Image 1 (cartoon, rainbow, N blue to C red):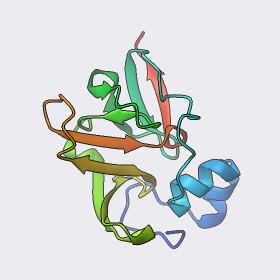
Image 2: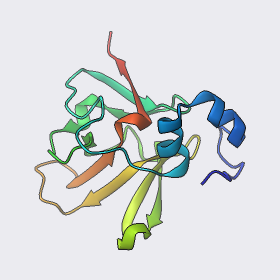
Image 3: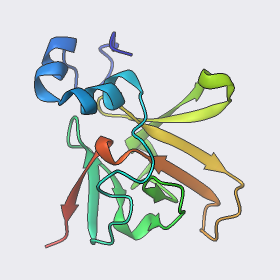
Length: 139
């Protein structure tokens, strides 16, 4: 993933991303790592606001779509708009999943799952790494 194509609105070199992000942020956002469950700063947050990509600042999710999934990571039932995220097939770790990336910079955010039975309007769970996001509280 570090060889990011230049077709994103926000494009930086690998060196620029490394200079901007902490090693843990870089591992998740640029190398598609996953933070450990139940340790992220937004897992249980109830603050009203908008969650933005920590790499580029693009606004991605609203606190209005955040719900308690008890899975260990912040969960949302929809992005702010479909064009804010992109989806890629992920067959790593012997699983078939749908990866969610920021459409503005291509950074890895997490995965989206369907049909798990959560009582949400979309029957989807965007399972997103806290370290991929920055909360902008509503003023």
